[in-house]
Length: 218
Ligand code: DX5
Ligand code: ZN
Image 1: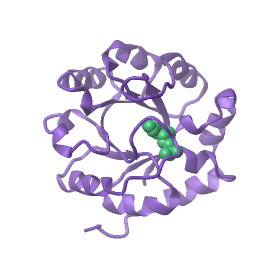
Image 2: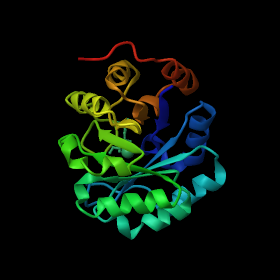
Image 3: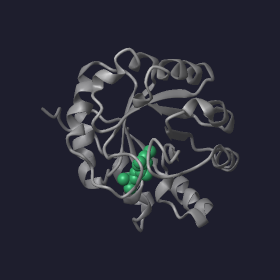
Image 4: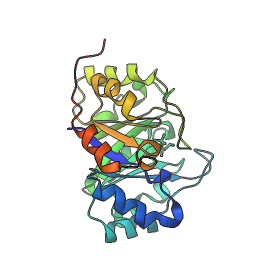
């Protein structure tokens, strides 16, 4: 069954607790928490303190996505705050390998993310150190964008490489394009706008949980 990870970037910041409770009560598997440094991406988002308070208040696993040039500065803080999945970006270069090792050693799942234009080869030698590969389906930084369909090829290639961890996508995913992603090999879906802007989130999560791979996309 595909993991459903609502992205709290689409929640109402002044009603974060209310919106997170709604996501949790809808049966989501993980909660996706975006972290932005206004440098790797042109926006700012959540801090270790927010992760810590989410951890204290809810039992849902926290899937923390670090869109940062220097994740090493806050890696320990996010681990200590309670990240269950901690994802860094491949574009930060050589230091990524060591950071994935630190994440794994802490007991969290280690994730490696790719911008839409970054080729799969960028994680040769890294994906073995990662429990999850996050293929961005939009340029990171903002919710509510349209999915870049070209990323489907990358997801398929990753699946066909025999990668055994989670294959996650993030950005522009909606119920009406999710089937193609699942057919391509997706096993975890981050969804912001499509879940938080729907009237009945529980029914949507149930429908998504029932979606199965129907065919292998060519
Ligand atoms: C984009 C973020 C996403 C974002 C997805 O940079 O990483 O997690 O919240 O939002 P939607 O689903 O609205 O595209
Ligand atoms: Zn994200």
